[in-house]
Length: 125
Image (cartoon, rainbow, N blue to C red; front, side):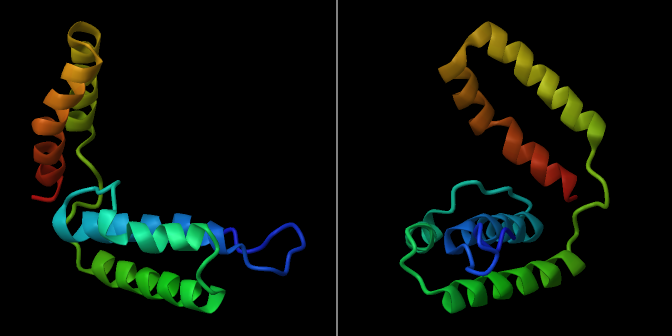
């Protein structure tokens, strides 16, 4: 974690948002097989950290709890050691072809509604 500002001593509280978000997303991915980018239920807390409204000891304690939880979940995950590279490559090639032929809005809607969740869950089975 980028823990210090330019003076090397003061913790960069707003920098804690990145590892907190990564741990929250990682925990969800390992538990449910879904990579979550939007963390709506934690939005208020994350924005409070980013605005500097939370004291460093509180932010750091949450960050450390999440890191410990991530380690515990990682130790018992059912996800494979390595991803299915062939499936991922096929998905990306298909996505690129569809993007070029269908257009932005339609592509995003069709991709969100079909392939990603099915494909990611497939990796954990």
